[in-house]
Each structure stands twice: as C-alpha cells, then as structure tokens.
Image (tube, rainbow, N blue to C red; front, side):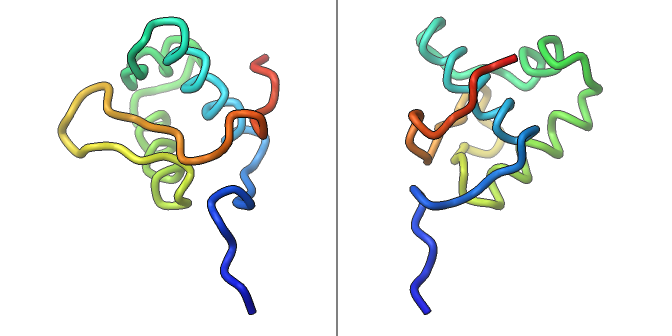
Length: 85
C-alpha cells in the first residue's frame, strides 16, 4: 500500500478554514499569522487555537518552529484550500 503524499492529505472543513486563513493572512501581510490573529478571527479561546495548530502540525498540513512566533508554513497546495468564510 502506497503512503499518502502531502498533496493527497485530507482535512476537515474546520481545519480547511484555519489553513485558508493561514494562507490568506500570509499573502496579505507577508508573514504568517500569530495564534492571537487566528483567535481573533475565529473568535475562539487561546487553547482552542493552539490545539488546532498542534493538530494541523501532527497531520502534516503545516510546519512550524517551536517557541518561534509567526513561523507557520503550509505544507499543502493552496489550490486545495476552501474559500475562507
């Protein structure tokens, strides 16, 4: 059985919204968002955002440098991202 490539990784609708936000924020501001930026946009608690970031990283959808602010990088093709709601 072949391994799933990064391009084929799937994500939930909620994860897709976070990924779309990361992508658009990075394009607009020329730097990745901080977790507080995601917290404000999605109107969720800091632990909720942090758990989502950890989940996205664990699933291989993003990469980040621990203890380095604004270090999130998408690891999937942006054309697969949903429209940000």
